[in-house]
Image (cartoon, rainbow, N blue to C red; front, side, top):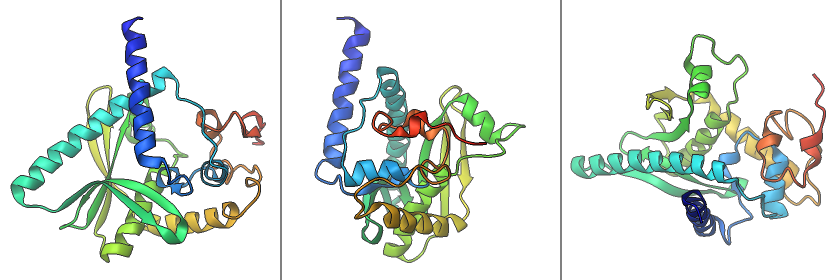
Length: 238
């Protein structure tokens, strides 16, 4: 067995352990990480509870880099909080019962009422977000995910002073904090209300309709359920 095969086996085991610890027995909940994305994906995951396709070895390696960076940043904040006597949340599990949503918040500074999500990306995506020629039609999925956490935070703690995404460029280790406008709280609220309307208590997935299922054309190519959902072969109209 080659070292690459040994490493792949190791990463597969880590991923399986994480999936079992985080999701086993709680499959009926929508994943907060899917905020703002295809409603059919939520249907297959939470209603039919279909087991998605296994990740490719390269994908698991990419995930592992992101996880290690997450852990490093979180450990640094945990150490700082202990030294300064700060109250923080790290990887705190959250439930939004009214919308059947469950997730894990990366980081919250409770004293400041500011929440963070950590996102790793490559230089190509970094340039699209921050370069001279910014993406004119960006995905707002990261903002919707963080706003979902913000919605939960407000419901439980009453005050939310800020939402920030901490980006980390895996190619050159550049970092940047980006403020997420509070208007996304209302957008996330509306999204999850819509998602419940079209997914919960239904006997079939929502109809394929670009802008809702999927929200973006690129989703189908990355979806774990594209082996059972006919959206992958759909010829989208311009």
